[in-house]
Length: 231
Image 1 (cartoon, rainbow, N blue to C red):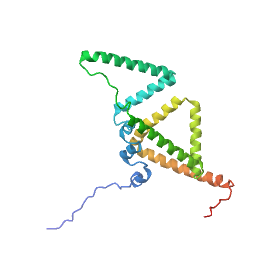
Image 2: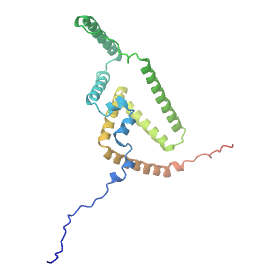
Image 3: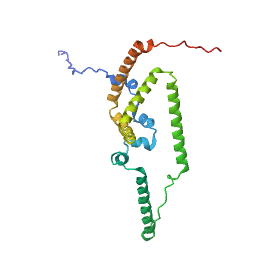
Image 4: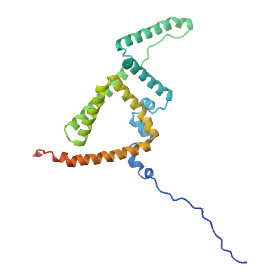
């Protein structure tokens, strides 16, 4: 019996090349997964609304903000008549409910505790105070000139914001900011790979431009001698 050598046929496997997103995913992505974005937005129900976890609630908030913007910016409704009419409507509802409750064998309406809660107002005041103090402290450090790059970036951002604010009303500006906060986080969560790539590329371009400006312009500005403190 002759030994016939066996021939093995190997299927041609395509070569595997590692993708850039696999190799530098931890470097390019500023946020790692949904949990980090959720924590960055403060967590809780606010983050759930901004990330559209509950679509009905998020859509309701968006519809309410759009209605407020339409009333105050498009129709140019005054806030005092609006508040008075809302108070009248609420009092009529409470009046009808209170008088019809014994007939329908239902409990009379009560004011929700969260509206008059001292703890909620105290937490809100502390949060606003902390955010304001932190913002003023950061702006003060930047204004001292410790980081020239951040100083120029903040000044440029304030100039852009001033130009936008002069061309539209405060209500429209707040509504645009609300739309950005209500849509950008969920869009980033869906297209985070493409966004990270564009952000990394834009950051490299900005760094190259700043190096050119720094070498050609900023370094040529005469500065006084640096005084050293004698201990």
